[in-house]
Amino acid sequence: MDIYEMVVKAAEKGLEALGKTKNKNIKGNQLLEWILNNKDQFDFNVELIKVSWGAYLTRAILDPETKIAREPGKYSLILDNKKSEIVQESLTDEESNPTAKPGNIEQQSPDRQKREEILYNLLAEWLSLQKYNAEVRADSRKGCKWGNPDIVGIMLVDDPLGRQQIEIGTIEAKISLADWRKEFFEAVSHKRFSNRSYFAFAIGANRPIIDKNTIPYYEELRKYGEKYNVGILVVFLDVINYNKLTKENISGLNLTLDNVVINEIWPAIYEYVSPNDMYCFVKDILELDSSTEVNSFGTYRNK
Picture: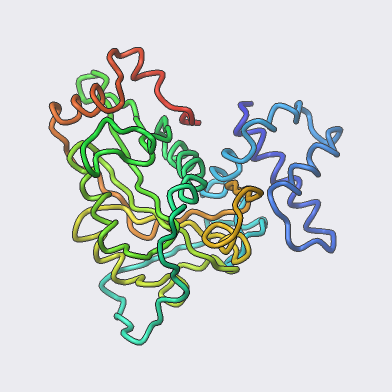
């Protein structure tokens, strides 16, 4: 049994037990606490799951083979038979809503860069769950204007002849949708060296629901994603944490994949990148000079 299987088994057992109590608002840290306090109910060492708990729990939530899910429209965890659910969504079926209000979108503050950094590790961990070895690269100044993605991921893949190739994924992160029509093109510019490019933004919502009433500019964002082939990620925070992120003192703000929901509202479709452009990015921007360095890239490793 590997670590991921341990997490799934422990989480499902814990959710079943906690579901019988009056506690109906189960968070990831509460679930882990129950597991560690009930070690004798497991036939494996539950201490082994602590280090990778957050990443593996998020993977389990996304995995249709498990029963671990988030309660619809909430941040709490439940047991759910995901195999019985079929969700279909079509951009062409949606109608624009010209009366929708953009919500409370704050103007860019002088310390916005510092606030955006809080999102970087969350998104790097999310990218690692998409099978990339990911790393925060926002501080790099090697590239030209709009040539330094906030997060970079490298995936090692084998071509049809068995030769190892790399796939690059990048994320540009913003704390809000203020000035997004300009900032979106930072993600577009990364496509010259990235096979999959994402534009990510945070919003505050006590119910993380993907619809045009919760997400400002929802249809327009998806149309931009479709037109320019850029993935769109929304980082849901509860309203209290979002206000801290955008307006208040951030020194005590602790965000993890346990209290944040990251959803893809438009996929990043793979696109071919010329080997020369990819080589220049890897060598000149990432400063990886050998296959060994490429293979060891990433603070957040593909789990």
